[in-house]
Image (cartoon, rainbow, N blue to C red; front, side):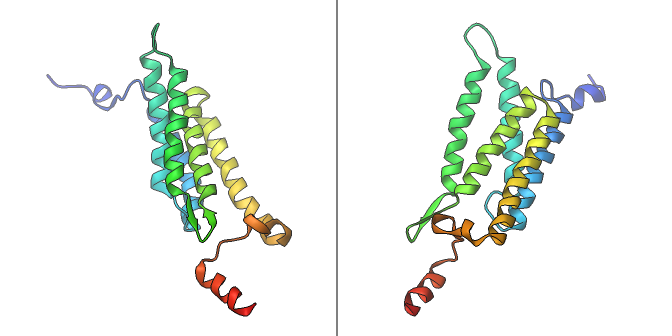
Length: 167
């Protein structure tokens, strides 16, 4: 009638170390986004990685003659596109949120990598994502030529009105 602790805490086929890696990898990326007041902070990033990992592992469990886990990966990529589209907006003719959408896409890839390549690969990918997000900002701060045209920082309509008035 009573369960032992191993049975009580078992989440097979998922693994606790992989869940920890998913939360850690999502938190690494999410912390960078949250510290810079961008969409998709720590909670959302961790949930995207964890959810993607769970879908991949669970799809492997239902593998048979008609079920193919690689199809689940394709569906995750498609589905995550909808989340990414939700963070992109057009404000005054300027599209914002594209980097956040791309980050969401990478978070899903990190979740897939936990199930397919292992947790260490996922954590390394998360660090690479943060290096890209933060590193490009450093480059843009150092070289103004990198912030021309569509790559300029969106400062909102108030700044734009001031510029138009000063013309």
